[in-house]
Length: 316
Image (cartoon, rainbow, N blue to C red; front, side, top):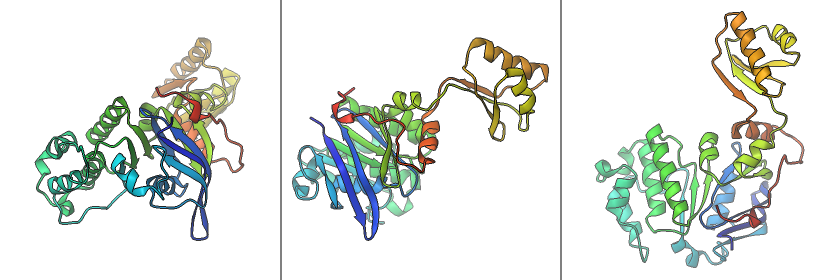
């Protein structure tokens, strides 16, 4: 049984259709990354799963309950981290954690949890004096203190430094090991590629692609060679040598429309060497999740690149 089931969800904000037929499912012990550009409907979807918004159509079930009508029954089992706010400016981290812990039957230890998110030294600072990254860490701790079975994290790494991102990654991995279903919205596509079992990309309120990170990256199209070199290469001359099209897709970033065979890679590097040009990096035959995201969210039609029935996928 899925911990979270979203079926053809429709949500309106006034006259605006914010979510238009979104479907996905998350099993216990799975991490789902919900990706999309600003305004795509990610936060609206999360707020509906939490029970803050009512669907205009479709349905949402969390642990078999309706988040709107069964809100009070569901809340002890649900942990949610909003994008920002939700804490009184004068409150202290340890006080907030103890307060929220008191609402739960079997909470985590506030002092231990504060240490896990790296805020022990700021236990008695006020919310208003915490940095943006520290506020994010506290919001994450507040979402986890009740030992929830389902966790929703809305942009958990926004404003957090590299060590903080590593901490969030480890906490998400720990939740997965514990059998918790996790939904993460993020603009950190590299993080999603590394941590998510399932990815759903939404744009303009609709799902444009879904599947595992590996499936989506395989769906990105014809194999190609991508490399970095000084800007302004003579792409026509290189293309003539390789007998393939060469495009400078960004300053110093090039794409060659060739299979990444050893002979083709050798021809490319030999041309660079002959022209005394450095090779900054080389990526052959593998698209990243960012490649898929940029391609899918640039599509104006309604045909997705790939759809995978996540409801039938076993937990990994």
